[in-house]
Length: 263
View 1 (cartoon, one colour):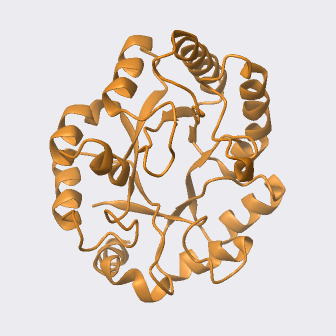
View 2: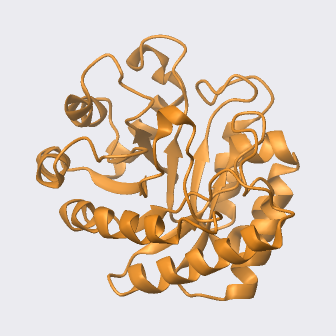
């Protein structure tokens, strides 16, 4: 059965960030993810997480100044020191939360530029080898060019090729179904093909990026397919609720009820 993680950067925005852990637990979630925890002390985040019996599924390494358009450093040849600093910054949060997956963002760069490709591979190798010492997996996530124009890692086949070529045991694909549908479509066949390298999955409706119900994708079918494929990881709910978060959880209620019955 799918294990869902509420994305606290997008969901439960009716309350301040540190109060969203309680809101997620009360709604029936047993795991959470978020984009970035760095505005709060590691101990604060870890305490809220453990108080409410939640598992930390994932968060991102620091991407630079988000408000100025920065989206990571990994593919930027002159920003390797920033990649290293972001890993050092994340480690206290990883220890406080017990997270086992961190997403390394590639940045805004031209994937046709050999220097950007070399910089990206160098960053990925160093990050994976460094975080592997703490038992942490590194996620690579292709992001669609409509949401983030100019993002370096905007192709699932390219990402899969990097993972295969580098052949690092803790390097995995972050398969966001929303991004996959926009970039390539053919979601089910891609899941079947790429499942051995997938370390985390995320969901949202397409094209609106709201609750995973209706619109282009048949999520009940996809959730059943993930069960058939033996996927045992988390499914991050990285969507923007249309209105009140709790009122929009009708899609989640059957899965929460099944989880409660099995507990």
